[in-house]
Length: 228
Image 1: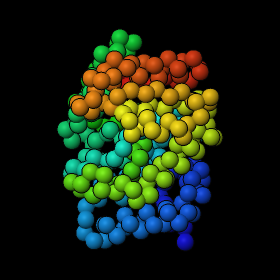
Image 2 (image 1 turned 90 degrees about the vertical axis):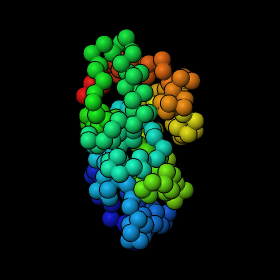
Image 3 (image 1 turned 180 degrees about the horizontal axis):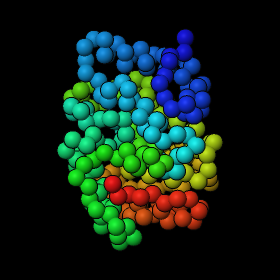
Image 4 (image 1 turned 90 degrees about the horizontal axis):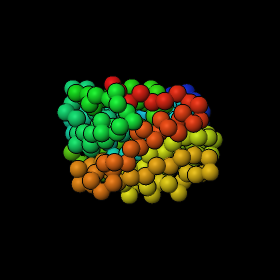
């Protein structure tokens, strides 16, 4: 039996074959069993597919790929690198803000006092984690359960059925997903991960955010307003 998935309608249609596959039933059963066993799972079930709800399939202009949801209380809300407004801005996101702020081609950016990236998602940025759930306090605890198969299918779907999407792949894990993307149809920008452990190895100075808008301008698409 195909699981009932509450997800934006265009994505629901685009991914209907994935939802019908055995691995996806096993995956949803696993997440449900974790919750039924009294384990705290992030994000809240209503936000597991938030990245898709904020950014419908036909409106995707940019994909930013993360690895795992935040595992601290009330941090994760379904968008990679993003946290709820009342939560302290995480270090990797602070470095993302620093990179935008230092880019001379984005002169109007002011570092916000929060880490909620919903405004980016609403402009056509799919903020996609490779794994969409995690047990509280246990990073990567839901890795290898089927989410990666699903999100790989999402990347392939965008690659195959859309044109001119810009993929931002930061760090070795994200870069490994490049093989799923048809670079004759799409733009792929790679850099080090914005984590404090690696940001100085090629994330700072990558100027990906102004490059995104440069590509969008050339394709006569509306640019991203990075300010919030």
